Length: 320
Image (cartoon, rainbow, N blue to C red; front, side, top):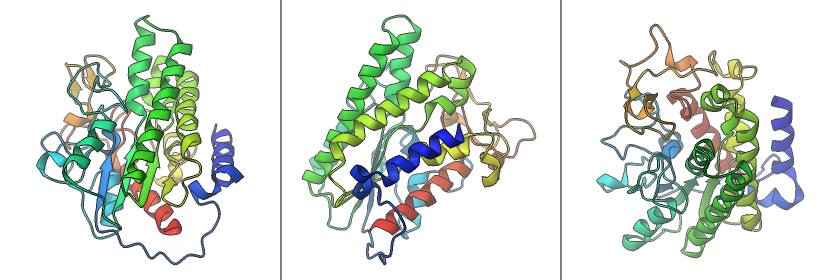
């Protein structure tokens, strides 16, 4: 599995069509970018605390999101838009529909998050914009398969459209003056404890790939303003039991949180662990969360969040 994804990552990173978008190879550029702000749009992976400061990870008082790890590397911070900040990402948000991953209305989609920003603000010349999506759409479409209202082929068709919809939002950001846009799609959902337990790993791996490929095609020529940071490649390393120990992660298969949500939670059904409710007091007995990859069945621990944030920062520094 590692070899398969490593080959895919190499093809994406160094393929002629995507070389500008991903910044292939070693950089000799001395970074001149000093961002004024970091602005983020997306789903639970990028939510910096829209719900009373709680995030989809272990809420342990540390810098526990990749967005703020990235921003802190520039001496900046991102606070939730709900308190006037530039972090617009919302847990369970889908790309282009306000019906969230749990089937509920009221969560602003990624396109609506951008609407909200543009209604009151403009992009500055040195703002860095982070946009991530896809996971919530995959969860919602998989649920529709599980309850028998669509086929897996229909699911994957819908997921590909969601990928194209995310690309349209990237194009929109640039058209509205965003000079530095960092985009990432769905990480490999087939490696999550959710997929492994359900026996849908192969299906969700291919579905994640379809989303990302559909997203990349429309933005492939936008390398001047857009950088693709491959979360599938990097988080696959942290999610695979064979490669995770190299990062100090000794458990890449089970969640460290025990915070059961008897409501709709993260979209996997009632009575499931929801990391939004997770604190240092709701962990597996005796567990060290720094050694776990997953906080719940889909979302990551602070260690993984910080590693990805540092990875994204290194990619941006190499490009701009």
